[in-house]
Amino acid sequence: MDTRRIGRSDLRVAPFCLGGNVFGWTADEATSFAILDRFVERGFDFVDTADVYSRWAPGHQGGESETVIGTWFAPRPGAREKIVLATKVGMDMRDAGKGLSAKHIEQACEASLRRLRTDRIDLYQSHTDDADVPLEETLRAYERLIAAGKVRAIGASNYDAKRLGEALAVSAGSGLPRYECLQPDYSLAERGYEAELEPLCRAEEIGVIGYFSLAAGFLTGKYRSAQDAAGRARENRVGKYLTPRGLALLDVLESVAREYGATQAQVALAWIIARPGITAPIASATSVAQLDDLLGAADLQLSADAIARLDAASAGGIQG
Image (spheres, rainbow, N blue to C red):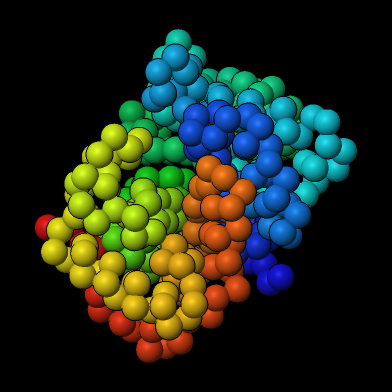
């Protein structure tokens, strides 16, 4: 299977990233283990999580996803070497703190390493920008972690083009590690990344792993009304796409999927994989069957005509 580089780092990954946000939340431990086993069995290697997953769930404190992954590693000799492991820091972890100060990053890294039961994080990402901390302080903390062998490369999530550009300038000017990867909200339903971030990332050779690649499930086609989404974990997010433009996009997505004998989810992910400058889409699965469906996107080659139709149907995003 072809692999793609994460920025200018030495990290290379298969063109699909498994989202770990569901582990220990909507996928219990046994199901999460089965999904991870199947993911590796199918020849894929890139897993993304965060220290804050899944703090939002009742009774959770954060760290649940990392703990599940670490528990999966423990009894499987060689499993850690088969995974390119990404996690994130910076979101509110209650008593454990938040933000991108050097102190918090270094403490949070140690906590993540303990939960993940590993000695290194392959891609450590700033989960969201922290304007209260100088960029140089944040990058110097990462420099120390890289020098100590605890982190291999760093990335940014939820940064706008201005702040990402400023961070890259600080790295270049001070000889500090630079963000090698960006994690934006990106899908057929959310194309704002293309305006300013895409040109910057392509010019600077920054890897891109978009989250919400299926727009919280909307692009699977299973939500066509408010009633379909009622009571679901992402009801509010899906609801904003239930517009005439959104439903028209689903019609085109369904038509292309029918032509290829594929699912709508596979087509939506294949469209992202085909985009210039994309390293991998991130998508999560709550069952092995769902994972198998999603992984089919990596082998789906869309024609220029199919891509053009999807581009036209989704131009500018579909809100409103």
